[in-house]
Image (cartoon, rainbow, N blue to C red; front, side, top):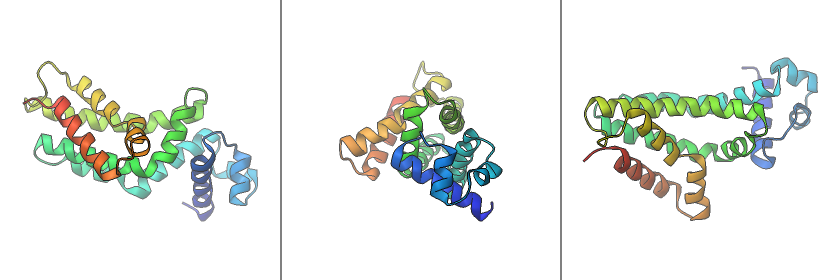
Length: 190
């Protein structure tokens, strides 16, 4: 990645965190200190910029390898818990950008595409964990792996994270612990 691309991505992240996802490529150019044409040279569209941004944030944080290591834990219940901890620590970091994408995804196809790309991968991770639990006979009786994955994904969504940490004043650590315990209790059989 070139230094200009990195600066553009940093500018886009700042704009989203401070003002929401309604920025234009011209806004990014101004924030970066380059021409609008330079922004388009590196990112063909606003959609490609948003997609590059969310993937770049994932790469910088190393969330994918952490989630893969978590899912590889031999015990399926501990693998689920490790995956939850990895995701919830990351949710704290990406919350400003994720909240802005979530808020505008219904009206903005570019933010919807970026949101769906990242959430699709997260849901797939939950599905891997739920299938392992199901294969080991550890899912709550009557709960299909797909439903368990959807429950876990929804229970640990960015809005839930915000409600606990911002609205309720819970620490990120405590929110992560309580959500991990709640998801485990909801989908793992006794």
